Image (cartoon, rainbow, N blue to C red):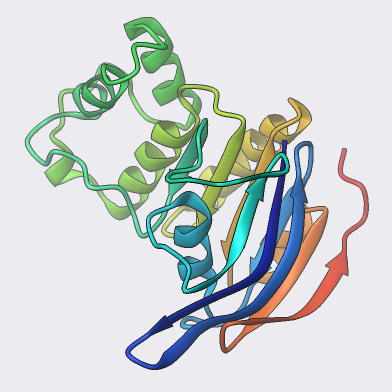
Length: 214
């Protein structure tokens, strides 16, 4: 898959949140988007996914103008809204029922993979921030999508969990997926990404190639 962003602009209340975004993204690569809070990373991800409509420019997916939501995409943006009185498995099962791509066993395998107890009955409202983050990552990857868009995926995780999620992301990249990761931490992106785009005030102001990952 190839996603081309051409002259992307997003303006709200006369404020330019995105300006002149021109990048090409390809499957098999992980792309980092680095910058301080408010630089436009999350807005850009919302535009790519289709949660926001750009004010100007076009997005092309495999040379066709994207219409509506990006298909076959796993997403974490600003944390998913889970049903608070359901446990983790129940939440993912509800969401998985929309597409019926995976069964209960696959849901539980994904929950275990991110470091949670797949059989725990603890309600999500009683989860720690780190547990909610892991469940969000499980949600993003559980249906084996071709594209992963992850906004600050390592937030609220302890060191062991960070290492585990990093391993999962690198494994997903080795499968040939396109992965977009937003972070304000260069070290995290350097470990995971092939290319890092630096953002400031809604613009991409720099691009850095990272060394090949194992």
